[in-house]
Image (cartoon, rainbow, N blue to C red; front, side):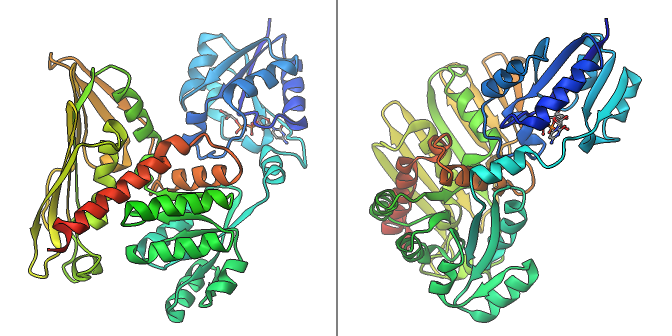
Length: 445
Ligand code: C2G
């Protein structure tokens, strides 16, 4: 009996997939089909798969060619499967020519001619039209956004707005997009807006973008007052638009995995969350000069409050702050103390004091530790009473990691609500509330 194996995502199952499976089956007597998990596809840069794994498996089965279906979840799996299932032929479409030659060591490799003029990418594009996004602001983060957004298919960055025409033009030239100094004209050129301007301008821009019918992805901190967050979310909802706070940690796969494990009972009940993030900033930079809106907490507070709010909730009994300040009054280092019934959290951040950037989640049965840069969660450990009892978990974090939030933002625009839980409206409002409390008390000393 000749055993054949092939792999694929098989998203939006189409003629090309059907013909590939048909010919794969004809190569032998028994066909095994490996269908990729969502997580595996994310690690290889496929961020916008539409169908669930179950649907994709069902569709492969319905073709009638597969004698056996297995799940492909990691990059080195093919060579192992081939040996495990004693496969004679590995086959895949001609878009992969050469890339699987290394499998010749285990079996015969056959590249089948790809069916022309049909692909999942094409169908995805037909299903949801390409969205045009424009950027407000031209700072460092805006420069990081463009290459990351390019990796998310279905979204084109087309325009930039900055009231300083020269900055807009320079940025536009660099990235090959259009510059606007007139906000109305800018809105007309896009479907969605990424706001990467100084914090204090966010509220105004969000309101005006939503007012012009545009979906909004706004950098953190989205706004600096809880009531503003609630008002804007309500405004977006009334208009059928997406308003989305861009905290990349909340959307990266490693952080989701971490929260899942922290809540699984593996460390018992969570009693304490300690998050610290420091980044030494040049004292001449805006962050340490702008006495009204600069400072460590407005800059980094969203990151360090995030795990506390996600794990212990937004209903804290008490929130206090303590800061070390520079001569201009801005906080160089801040600790936020959250108190809950039966639990507590500390969110520490600094632009002028360096510390160990670590996240520790303590529970009644053990603790989780994530070393810096935990805000780009890629690896963490679960410890128990016995110091030898350590479980290790890892997850990919690619590039600057903005691709994950951009991809989730786009899915929401296209009608999916599967990512809403990652940073709910309530979470965002609680973070804005934290900022508000800081600025009202400690913040403006
Ligand atoms: N295919 C084809 N013709 C098309 C489109 C796809 O023959 N018009 C083939 C692909 O070459 C592949 C299979 O159908 O062999 C599944 O395609 P995808 O779902 O795009 O999966 P892919 O990313 O190619 O997965 O581990 C996964 C594999 O490496 C390949």
